[in-house]
Image (cartoon, rainbow, N blue to C red):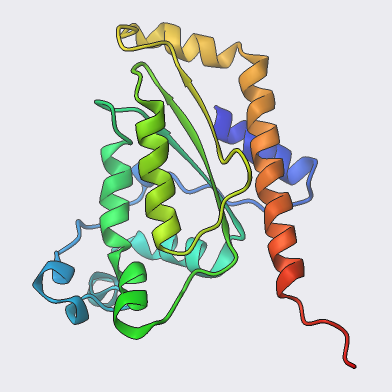
Length: 200
């Protein structure tokens, strides 16, 4: 819901092109652990996507490395952590981070990441910290106040009420709009800073 609000605002109010990827709809294999075997065994492009044309992780690589200037990632809290789908994706992104380690090659530059975290459990700060650390390590930048979050607390296991609370919160919807606005504004600042100055 909040991700949809953010994307709609980015398109209608900010004039941004948007693309929605739902990890649950993508069929992609687990990481094979090549990095654990030896750093140089984990290659870019990913070995799995080169060998398996049906592996849809290619859509994530294309979007994050080549297409998007701003990422808005939404995750629920599951057992005090981001979703298992996030970690499955993150492990497959070893091939991006490993290019820095093995080849001093940064694939992600001057791109911005923001986050929407919701769940029936507490631990928002820990989930935000994990997301910030991971995306910083692969090259993303962050706006001031890089995430919004909602939780009714550890014992709020009545998920239908959690969904209802989010659906009826104009404050959260406005937070999503402001979050994506901060992301787009930060990306514009980074883009302007990278532009060559006038010739002298």
